[in-house]
Image (tube, rainbow, N blue to C red; front, side, top):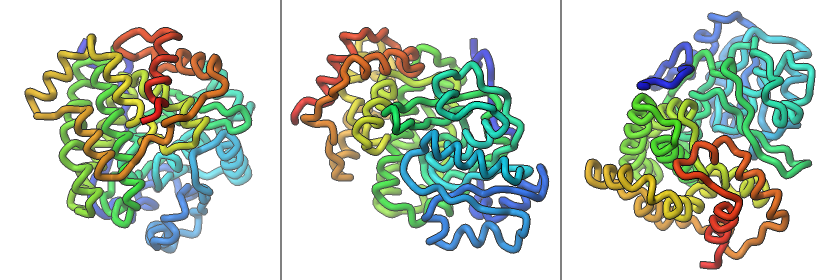
Length: 367
C-alpha cells in the first residue's frame, strides 16, 4: 500500500509571501460573510487590519491565549450560531487554528465540545468552510483533520477529529512568521520536528507518508536554528515543512512521545513542543530495537542524528526539562490516558502500562 486507506488533503493550498493579505478575496469563494479567528499578536503587529481592509461583512474573534479549551470552543461556537457566517478563517498558531477548526466543525452539533472529546464517534460532518493561515511553524494543524483540546475542569487533553474538519483553503505566508518570538519559534519547531520523526517511524506509515516525513525532517533540521537566530529567509522552508509534516502525521499518526506529551501538558502546562522534546530521549531508547534501521538511515543519508540534533537545539535555545523532579499524583489515570491515546497505538513498539510508568520515571528523573 503506497497511500493511506483514506487520503484527506486541503482543497487548495497557496504558498507565497503576501498570501494572507488576500484572505478575504480568497474566502469569497464561499461567500462574503466571514469570521476571522486570531490571537493578540496579529492585532499588535497591525496585520489584522491589513487582512480585513475595508471588508464590512467580516467580523473578528480574538483567542485569549494559551492552549485551546473545550470552553473556548463552545464560546466561539455560540458566536458562530448567533450570526452564522459563510466561512471561518483562522490566522495564528496551532492553538488558534485548533480552536477555529473545532468550532467550525461542531457549529451545528447539539452537545458540548467536552462531550465530543469523550465521544468522537458522535461527531457529525462539518458544514462550515475553514480557511487556515498558520503564523507559526508549527503544529501542522492547517493540514490535518485534528483539533487538540484541553478540558481544564477534568485536567484532560485529547484531540477530536473528523474527516470533514480538514481546512478547505490553506495560506502559507512566510511574512506571518516575521516578528514571531524566539521562544515560539523554538517550541513550534521542536513540535514539528518530532511530529515528522514519529510519523516517519509510526506503525501506520506508508511510503507516501514516509516520503513526506523524511522531507520535513531534513528541511526542519536545516532551517530551525537559522530561523531561531533571526534569519527570516528560512521562514518559508519552516512553514512548508510544518505543513508537510501535518499531512504526514494526519494519516500515519504519531507515537508514544505524543501519547505522553498530552497528559503531561495537561498537568504541568508546559509548551507542547518542549514537552515532546523532553520525552524524545526516553522514547527513542524504548523504540530503538524496532526503529534502528530508520535511525541509521537518517544518519547515513543525511548525517541527521535525531537525538543529538534535538539536544543541540535545547542547548542553544536554553530550554530545560520542566518535568525534572516532578511527580504525577494520579499515576494510574495518567497511565490510562497514555495507553488510550491513538498516538500511543501508532507507536512502532507496543507500550504496556509498566512501559508507560518507566518512561515517565525517565522523563521526570532529576538531572
